[in-house]
Image (cartoon, rainbow, N blue to C red; front, side, top):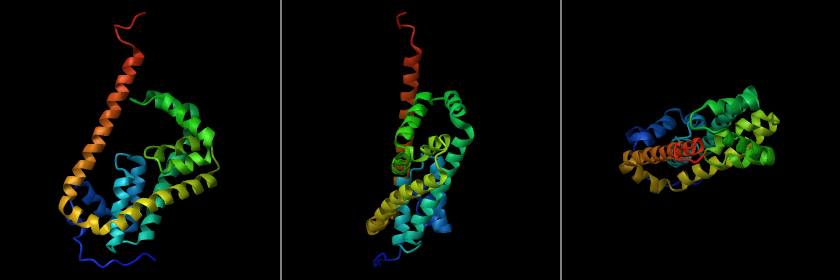
Length: 226
């Protein structure tokens, strides 16, 4: 059983601002189900990183608004359901149609898909297990698993285990640092939310510019000799 920590009353989640306030309000409103919903959304929308969501769930557990282990379970189930969707899409589309879709999608490259598939082919279940603890890979490792029709029971088991470890770590950090997090959130939640959004936006911009530069180099330029 997690220890009870003496503390003063904490402001309702609705009083926090920005992205952080929205996430805390979601998890406060529907409890552990909200944690699972946030992780399900993160599966399809990586710019909302679990590293920014899960400590908030730990903070709410520290404050007694939700159950610590309930939050871990909700987050793990939410991520698992999202992984099932990606697995099903990979199985439904198959290798060739998935490659064709990647080829037609702006800023995506077939080479990226081929590398991901090669990693899965080599490491199999280990890639699914470890991939749950790697940003971005966490969402998309399920696609090659579906394409290769990995045993669904094993896929579910390894996804569940990897997600549980990742979620317990980050929720545990939020719980452990609850007394420190609370005054920071109370005063700076709006600014911190803006910082998170700006960092994510800059990372996306960097990805887009780097990919465009790479595509231009590949297509050649007028100065390229024959």
